[in-house]
Length: 273
Image (tube, rainbow, N blue to C red):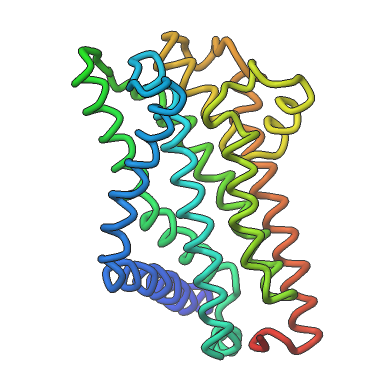
């Protein structure tokens, strides 16, 4: 019992240090964050203009805005998590984190929390831009607290994806392009801009199975556009899959990361780039 109590402050300290390090990087890069909080909303408005043939059509602003908020979040969260590992590898300090008595999951969880927090400002800027644009066009948006559930599902599933990519970079190192390609795939085939119900059946099935943001986007559109309840979602595979899919992706992420981490340790290549 005394060992457990003596270890707990150490675990909390390591967890807090990882969060603090991630937030310190966010503050240090405030100029880049400010640019992103401008460019992502502009990109969202340009997409709506393109889809609306030069007009900010009211019927497009909200559904596209929901998709863009999710896409912005997964882009920022995954990239920040991935580049935290890449940065430690390139600077030669990653191996030092494995010399501590702390289990690696403590450090990973801290980084995940920090990357989620760091992704929120840009995602919220897209949501705020959509709200202003909708109101300026004479529309209205009423926040429904039930959307917290699909938002949480998106966050959990995205963490699983980030773990897979971080595990890959421990072994294969120079895989930066994968993060960009994956986000591009989600933008095109994940129901971000075009509802999955308007896509080929096989595309919708793959997206609902493997894309962390797809079920959450469908659920948020059902709630905010159609007024559905969580128990009566009209599209997708229902509330059960909305909750199960991110857990499966997160679980797969943990398994893949653990496997690749063991490979990197066995090869002695944790700090090699």
